[in-house]
Length: 100
Image (cartoon, rainbow, N blue to C red):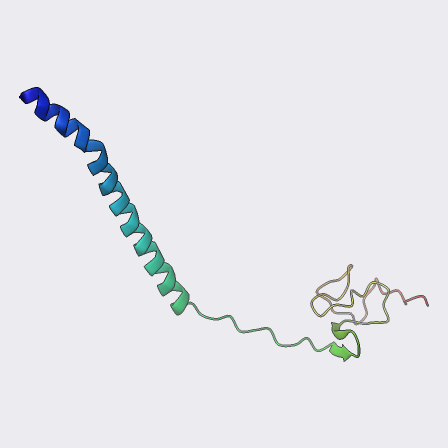
């Protein structure tokens, strides 16, 4: 009789342990989700950078920054050129006029 009870308890132990682990993992996932939702709602939104003073609109291309007459100009709204991407273009020592 004692052996039957031991076999029965040993047979039920793994499923009960598995259910307990799954329940605990679910609780932890819910806590992490709740924390991430709370963090995203309380996070400050970074203000967008104002437009650079040398940004202009070129018909057919869009917004560009930098000196368009320079050979190294990237023709982009985000970077000025390959040599000096953050600028400024005024009095740049790497300026080379564009060849036609």
